[in-house]
Length: 403
Image 1 (cartoon, one colour):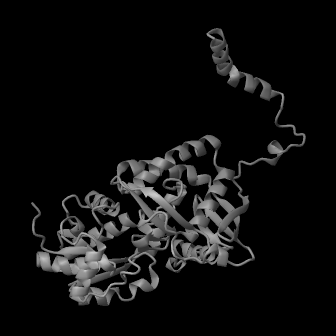
Image 2 (cartoon, rainbow, N blue to C red; image 1 turned 45 degrees about the vertical axis):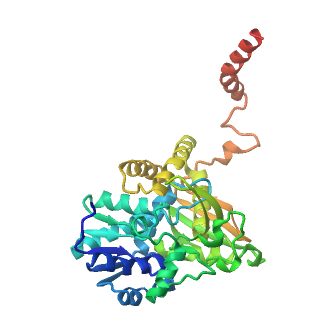
Image 3 (cartoon, helix red, strand yellow; image 1 turned 135 degrees about the vertical axis):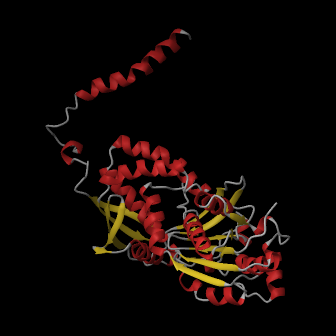
């Protein structure tokens, strides 16, 4: 049976779900509730959070600036792995959850709270990500997930509950989108988007203009990397959070990074999501381009074979699991040579790589040239091909013998 906690720390955003959950927790458990909001780059969305939480009954409010930690310790490791889920999704929501859970547990310890709560639904991935992270960091913590226990089983009912309690929420019946924003991306789910045939409305997008409305003149950007991590944009050294913010502005101006996909959730169902990841898309393309120049072929192919598994670990919520940490160590070893500069052309929704250079480049023009060279003997290729064709020839002869 669920024990009664002495104090609860709620992961609070000020949106529809957590605004209702704050009131519900206070009413249901009759204990102090601390509201915690992680600043991961939501910008102006955070302005009303403190006032809303306090007016909603929170005994204390934490709004912690985690932007640098988020990009440095969570986003960059994922991008060092060139990670992408199901060929499309750059994991903007997935990678934020373990950091939120980490800080939530730290606040629970500081506040003497023995329980944490979140607003993830019983149908989604976030409940798994939050709770696996919490248990990995604090094994005896009690996790309260109202969506799995209360009778408010839909966002329509939540809106009705909020209206009856006088709780202001940034959602209407006309635009019932569920959004999640941080420095890496913004996601949209729910409402009309639940119909996978319905094109998203243009006024929904926040971080980018449409490619059709983007400038007619391309813009070039250069990104410097050191050991797999970006350090400079157009020659200017920037902190991790500021670097990603600058790339977001550049990418958003040119309509880069919009994604519309139906993805496979960990809990077993398919879900339609729309994402904007302008800076992350630029960064992903640039990093892959530099790896093509500096990574050994077999190292790259081995690492690439691990990307689907690594992406699942992040997407499913196993950030603090030993298998993710082991794989991260191997990936980071490969990244020691990924240093150099990449130039990209930003134009009408595309971030095209147009140049790359590195002092650690394995590309040797003297070997790759179509002109004469003294390094590579083309005659050697005959023996190479005949040896590799041996098993194919044996199989073909056997097939012919057996009709």
